[in-house]
Structures are given as structure tokens and as C-alpha cells.
Length: 221
Image (cartoon, rainbow, N blue to C red; front, side, top):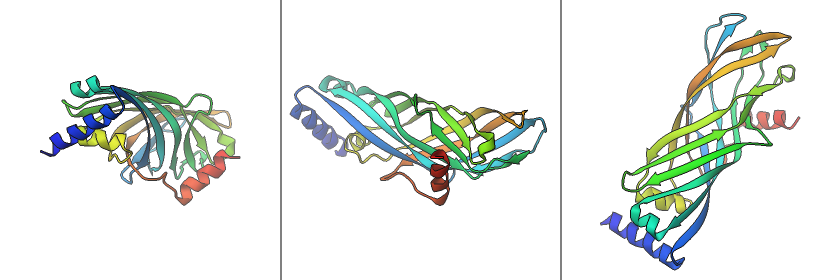
């Protein structure tokens, strides 16, 4: 009964816009407390992995074009652009203290991707490549490329679709992290692997915290 009512409302909304509508949705996603990464240094010393809690968030713009025909088929898609991203970790000692670790998008090419959903299979897929850099609080270490790929499928029925269209969605996306560690300290190459898992969930506003404030100050230097 509820599903039929939601479908009727959705069809009425599209009918109001004739045969199709173009939607631009701003989606704020906050890093959840369960999100962590593990820094495993292999050279020049094989060090035990160090776990780091993550904070921050991401703002994506989802550009969706949906027609009445699309809704009847239950299939639609959109383009995703990255408007804002900041993920922070406390920092570790790798020969020298790293200071805060701040993950931010490349200013010239932040990246983007696609969004696809099918109301019959009740699944949505996010495929986003974000060109991010890891910036250290210790200015002597500089930064290094740390690309972040968001490739995840989530449950997505008609109620979730209407929530997304009206800006009241309740999305939760979990993504595994696996990136090479490769930077230099005083001419000494540091290599290893960064692994972990990050969960992003819908939020009304971009997260704030003292750690994120520190990263904002570091990036602004």
C-alpha cells in the first residue's frame, strides 16, 4: 500500500514537469566512528601496523536526469562531482612524527563518477574516483597522492529514491581502503600499505571537530 502511494506521488511529480525532470542533489556524507585505517610500513624498517581512527566527510553533487519512462522501468542514472572532501587521522611516527594526516581532493581535478539505480532490483551503485592527496601536518614531509575510490552498492527502493530526490535521503556506504604508501623522509624512501574501511552516512551538515579544524589550518598554510 505504502509503495503504491509513493509511486503515485513520484508519477505525479514527474507529470508536473511534463515528461522528464532534471535534478541536482547535494549529498552530504559524514565519516562514521567505525571508520579506521591501518598504516603498515615495510621499508626502510618493517614496523608493526598502526591503526588510525578517521574523521571527516564528503559533499557530492549528483546530477540526475529522469523521465517518466525511466521511472516506469525503475532504472535511472546520474553523474557525480566532488564538491568537498576532508578526511583526517591523528598521525603516526614513521622515522619522524607525521603530524596530522589530512586527505583532501586535488584542487585542479577532484574527480567524479557515476550513480546508477534500479527500483526493481532495489539497488544503487556508486562508482566514484576521487583524486585525493594525503597532506602531513609535518611540513617537512609534504604530501603524496592518495587516490580514493568509492565503489559500492547499497539497498535502494522507491522510498530511498524519493528521499534522495527531496534531499532527505538516509544513505550509508561502506568502502574498503587499500592504497600503497610511498613518500620520502630526508631522502629515505618510505614504502608500505594503507588498509582499512570507511563508512559514510547521510548528514544534515558537514562534520566539525578539533582534528578537522587542525587539518583546515594545515591545508591553508
